[in-house]
Image: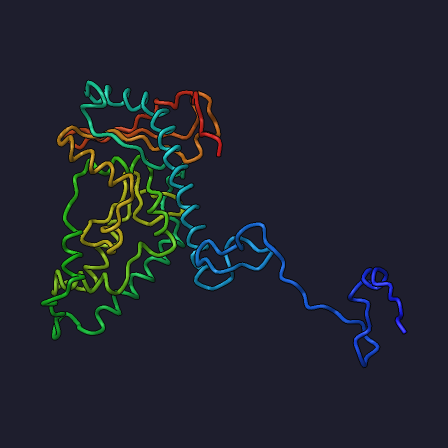
Length: 331
């Protein structure tokens, strides 16, 4: 006997709803791979697949390190761009006063005299307070005693090192520099020298040992007097004890290494300008970093200094900043 089966009705039943033989559960077909309309997202550094919803860099340590390096490089690039814009703006604003200072010292134009920009700090000059003097004397006594502890200067003189590259380098840095370079320090008033205020001019036992190598027969008393007699009558408040109105009052052979070896960018640039125009003297404009905050004429962010070919120093206090026509570009 033939039984008619309605194939249309059975075919219309969803396959997933058919009972699995021997169980009461419904059959679940295996998941099908999803089709992608485009290529899989990959880390832009290592090119490995990325989890969905993440950034374009995976969390592998090498890739994260590279990402941080890129971020640091971008910060440096922006800073360099900003510094260049500040320099262009500052050069434009100070050019008239530099020209005037050049004329006042006898130069026909800026092309005939070395010139540069420098930072500017506006700190007053005061006699060294007694408490700071006492603290410095205590430090000086301590390092001199320590340097003399290994040799008393009579029965055991310190031996000059036969092969000490640090000592050789120090001697090279002690070579006197052209006085004209002090124009940058006077115009700036010694921004970097303020760091020596809390560190006793950076003097250490090693500094004293260098002095004894130079002069093996020097006594404690003589060496102490050399340092104490170098104090200026007035110094920049809160700065190094030797930070006088025209820079450091301590002779180069007596200074700490860093005070002879370090050269700020402004002083290096002035040295280059002096090398290109030797014997012409120099004019330098000390300019505050935030001078653009006051674009009006006469803004109090300036100190102009000139040094003549005969090392005569002039502070042009009457010169004032002109108005700033165009400031920093927008980021």
